[in-house]
Length: 524
Ligand code: FAD
Image (cartoon, rainbow, N blue to C red; front, side):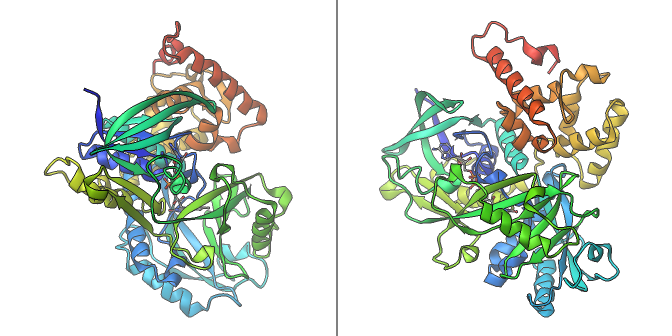
């Protein structure tokens, strides 16, 4: 008898991985297929905020804002290593939204989302506060400060996949769904393995239900396949960011109102940098080819330059990235007005095997989206009785099995047990892996025991850990998604890592004579 999965999820972004985790924890047999690396789509190109979205209040998205505000503290508790509270300075700029509107918005923001841990809003005298000193003359003399959180978006995806796998899900990366057809009450799903972009062998699996969580590809992936696509429409909206050397010394972010009414964030990023974004405009090309355009980079530089003492020039941009929001097309005229809420569409004509398609959503609301998706599928699935449908709100993600308060002491505890670590190295490991940093460091007694040093603090032990535990295969997987060390490494160091991984992968190939490898040598 061939295996019949309860659920095949197409797409290894935050929504696919969140659904896979939730479903597996409820006792379902789950397979997830991602055509590239996990989080290689929109989920690693966000502004990296776990936020209610103050701006969405203007569009009366009260349901979404309330749910997202509530999720901030839920997610912070289950992943205190990769989610951090962040204070935002909102200057009251003349010729922008009036102070009473900002105050009203912030009052709602503080009070509709069950806030318990994050501090509330306060008023700032920007003539005296250090946040005002870095602003250009005439920008604002007063303002407000409020709370949201920042997140390592790509790591949130991978940790959901890791937890799903720990609970029994099968996670296939570099595996594209290239065909799907209904056969009575189940699906036949064709999966093609892809190594370094080249098409490999295809195999067919069977599933009771199919989930299309392909983000920007939601409208095309199944449309291209025999079974036909979803009926709802997706609106692809491009958003770009730039990264520049740190614009100011303090650790708060700014929410700035540009002269065109748009909001621009400046966020302290990776110690040495400031992240600036974002733009908002319709996109019609191939989502995998999206790139920050010169016009967008200029727009972001101009928007911020006028606000700070330190100008932001095209030459100061060290990195830029772009993503495509897969929004539900609600017919809004402007891209920035299209709803950010999620919509799930169920298609199960005359008792045929169901297909669930996901539109829109935020990183912030992925957990609630997963719950909504599974609620829609409940009539078709053998969900074990007595299971808590909200279990993902309480179960820590891998490495996050400690309290919010304990996170601050993790780095010191690492230095105590591995005294050769510098404070910066320990901070990075604690803030990336939480309690799992100990698995990486293992029995190392001195730096030499961590194996080859690739640069920017990346050791062979960490690389092998990521290969074995987090589906990392290439230099980009490690430097831009499992970590952001790509920002800190030289080109030569990055090339050295890519070559090393290519060789390492060969030794790991099935049937390879030498699968002893670094993993065994390093005791991983
Ligand atoms: P994706 O992450 O794109 O995942 C879909 C996956 O499906 C991809 O990895 C793709 O490779 C895979 N796939 C496609 N076709 C196939 C196939 N045939 N077989 C197998 N796999 C396939 N949200 C927030 O909460 N906070 C923010 O600060 C924030 N900022 C944002 C800023 C920008 C500029 C953008 C663009 C979005 C932002 N968002 C933010 C929204 C958030 O990033 C997205 O809503 C979310 O990442 C969408 O996740 P997803 O899983 O639906 O899609």
